[in-house]
Image 1 (cartoon, rainbow, N blue to C red):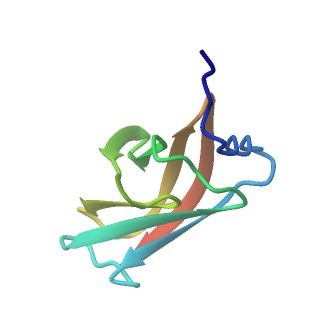
Image 2 (image 1 turned 180 degrees about the horizontal axis):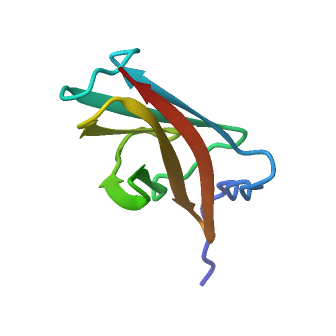
Length: 110
């Protein structure tokens, strides 16, 4: 008996050195006390369907974690209401294959 396998190409391994991320907000100029949509888009590789991401916002040196929702293979979204105006550090934690990649971004809130 002869078995035939499907001929599909294996996914290209993700190289963390070439992955980059952008962080955008909606609205573009967030205002304290109103909900902000955070959107992270990754470039440099096609991420797998099993990839996940978490936003980490530092408030008074304490981390607030927001599980992102996958919009497509390379884009993730989450929402947060910044209580006070200021500049916030936002860490994008990407989990794909055996990789945990972190990118640091900033959000300025009016």
